[in-house]
Length: 343
Image (cartoon, rainbow, N blue to C red; front, side, top):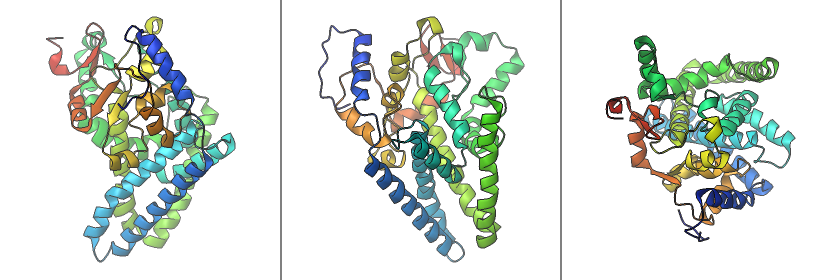
């Protein structure tokens, strides 16, 4: 991490985290021109790409197939804008954040109000072992896993397998489970208004698209685009908290600053992937101050005070995290099933 402010080595971790939190406060708040430019330019690229896919779909499908991949990346970028709207950081007005957030859900298939509630709960409880289960990936401790019956252990192993959790689970979550988000703690009426409202809009809008382009175009083009965006988004969300030296604590020992910065990764990505993912790799900064718009995270990072404990992960290193499945409270790290005898 490129750093501008030097910290005294005698400072405690809590002091360094407080300095970082104060620094991040300087970058919160939307800049209208930058938000509008991001939104308009990305939507323009998205529709240009879709038009090129439509034009080559029947005559040169291989071109259309190649374009599906970056178009899925553009859906991820649109989701980041929806995500910023949920944090009230994309526009200065709550009204316009909510309006744009709901409109973008047409492209992302993610109900804005429902997701906003669960995601804000995730921010408030991330890294708290006593408050797991809302807006995060289910993670058991080693003791919890070993105390389960063999059948429940098997079900957890199946759930945590990368093929089910990411390859299958991502698209299933976006396309199916978010249509029926049962078991959420938020007010029933509030959540279902968001979900059913989006479901109705999807039926009307994509029903109209199918009537114009045909079902084959939707099934062979737009569903793969959503699946690709789900795979990319699912992987980004996974690596943001599921890495070996992340931080989990019980409520009595839990600290918001510590959980936000040390329990979230700094995912170092190539510039093109950083652009598609809307700088969300700076997840430690986003968690300590969710009001920072995505386009200000780089500047916040470049001028941040030195916190050597920040968890930096490179792209190739992130692949090793796939084997991590359980939180070991004694070793204070995530371990894999194959490490249980040694852990």
